[in-house]
Image 1 (cartoon, rainbow over the protein chains, first blue to last red):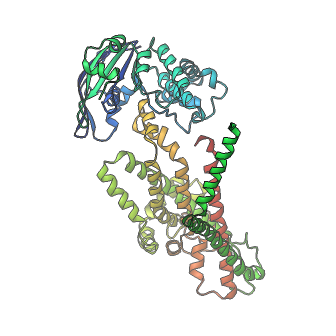
Image 2: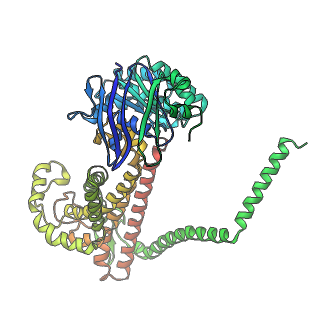
Image 3: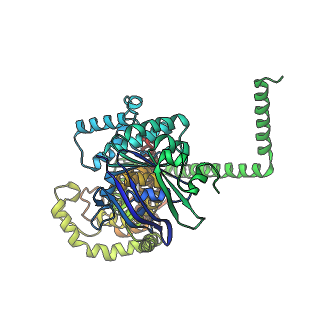
Length: 258
Length: 325
């Protein structure tokens, strides 16, 4: 199920502004890769190029190649909608569909994929909620609105919604930044479980979090405002946090950044 | 030693004092009374209108020899006066409802096209043109309806009669001319801009997070609209429809020009005839006597009540699924 992502020479633009310059990296399957770096360094922008969500912003475009196993996501005959069905995404703020019940939220993606049979849906919804460690908390109120859950539960609901369609890759854009420490811990535990099945990429502002959850860490940086973000280095998490190759990385993780 | 309770009491006291001080400022006082005054003013106007209508309606209602609610004739200037609102209510509600049914899908389609499909420059231009429709005086719509639509719609009307004739509303032998159907087409065009511009505004307010939630699941553009935009905009769309319906119910000049008065309730909407409250008032008020005018005001009171009920129903619909919004 999980697939390897190979990015080569990727530039991301907002109109005429180059936000991310010349990123090449390999993201290993069945592992967690964390993106860290200061605000505005392009890590979220880069993440969004991995499921072609970058281009939904008017004027935004991408150059370069993103290979998911043998397939170029930016190939000429590739439909971005199809890309997003295999590369799922969880956002910074939990965003369950406000008018839908918990059940319908999880089933939303399945219904888009044409799963209609009630018992099939029931099974996948249950498994996805179990997979997101949410089942026990919501099994008695599946018909209640998803927006009525707590922030941490909503975020796990969004994860359940994303994994219900069985994507190859799961992208997480600062999934814990709007959550309290206990909910954060629940999500981190969940990430550790999910990586046995999925390729996970997580953007985080929290270096401890990157150190806790990820196998490999990529550090992004910018030379200054208005300059494009660049990938400084990508390595084993333990190496990045103890003995990074680049001086900029060391400055950043030791707090001597600036 | 001060206990926690002491501290709390003191804090609460300070808070109270601050609140008292802030309401004591002159600017706050002026603003408060201005806001209260405006609120009360609206209620007073509503009550005054209702009282006026009731007061003026009573003389005719006392003289009336027919049942005011069920009679289909309108002979308020006769001796004795005999009049009822059944035909007027039928014509008003039917033409407005038909107009709403025709206008809503088109209006929402326009709003969706402008918001999600059209290139930016086209969207702006198109939105402007749709809003311009609202600026056309209703007399113009009436004249256009009477002199263009009535004469040029014969083919369409006969086609509808032929295809949908098995539905009683579209049945009839002598279809065409100044029918309720044509009236509602004119009304539909008139209420199109208000429905369209309000739904457009509502669609613009859909949070990006909801739209991206759908897109990230691999929803196509239409699926994104169905998953995020329409559910979020639902209550706004209903409000827009109700505002449109309110306008259609009260529309006067255009409908008075387009409809030809034929007595009685005719369920065949494609046949000439029909009448509405507002059209009846504008056409007969000038030549009416004392009782006749009083009777027209009574019919106005019924229209007033109908529009109120429509608005309350709309609010009830919007509030019903609050849990989910």
